Length: 75
Image (cartoon, rainbow, N blue to C red; front, side):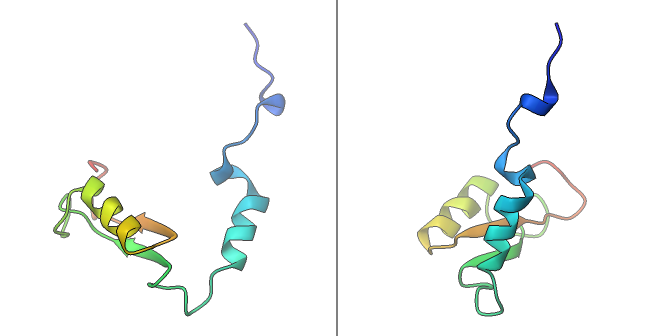
């Protein structure tokens, strides 16, 4: 079976135009009130499970986040 990869829709994270639109909304005032690109879970030196960290981010109104645990992909 052959798959035409050119015809397969790209996920939003791989869509450079979509990423560009997101990044155009970010400025110095965005971090960390709307976006936080440096968050840790208890999988490294944070205090929350990954799921709890995401729930906390949602509850305080973050638009986006990045989990940046050290030396692990266990989260």
